[in-house]
Amino acid sequence: MSAPPPNPARFSFRFGLPPSLGNALARERAERLTSFIEKALGRKVEVSVASTYEALAKDLLAGRADAVWAPPFVCARVEAMGVRVLARGVRRGRSSYRSALVAKAGSGLTLDSLQGTRVAWVDRDSVGGYLLPVASLKAKGREPVKTFAAQQFAGSYKAALEAVQGGQADVASIFCPPESTGLTFADGVEVVLPGKGGAFELIAYTEEAPNDGVPVGMGVAPEVAGQLERALLSLHETEDGKRLLEELFSAERFEPAPRMGYRALYRVALASL
Image 1 (cartoon, rainbow, N blue to C red):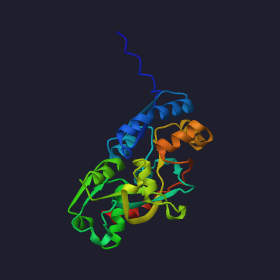
Image 2 (image 1 turned 135 degrees about the vertical axis):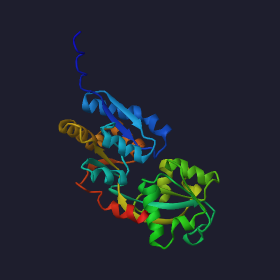
Image 3 (image 1 turned 30 degrees about the vertical axis):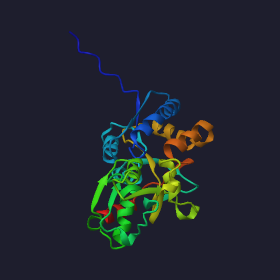
Image 4 (image 1 turned 90 degrees about the horizontal axis):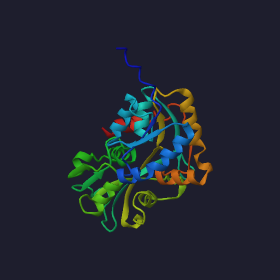
């Protein structure tokens, strides 16, 4: 009996999404992303939602994903291991964002009255949902482990904000536009919980960090990576593309990501430890 023929080269392209906006929302909008990438690359595309930020990074590094939409710290981690970030999102004309600590409207909480409260973070690798606010608190002399009576990781911004709304937590953090835009934390809340911007009040803002990006696996052929990069950078040129940018990437367009542009985030990561 002759040996079976070798398996044909995999023709599909696997794109991973983070859990930050919630699995249900991401999966609901993944169909349009699948169609967009299939048209750009001329091949079958599989879109999946990672269970955690760590899983998202591991999938890319292990070749289980060919490209991912990744939060800044994941971009920093994989970039340090030789992965190229093709593009990063632009929001309100800016390629950076900040985070805000928020509480339920009317709570009256301030940085000085956080002692003994409960906080709902997003994920340990979430820059806006954990790393930035923790680094900011530590810089102000407030160790989270000593400040908060309880810390939980909700898995998404939506779940963290809903924990505050439902009384399971007193504090959460939300990504929001940089100060230069003149916009506030409520803009970030509205992205995650439409119509609920007024249901929360500000405790404090953090410093800024680079926006999320799209790293591509080291096993992806240069011509395929180039096709994806060109498609992402031109996504804002069509109405369908603009809608996808807004609803899935919370961005108005993509721009080329500077080489090693996320390196500075290691300082934030170390400060949050």
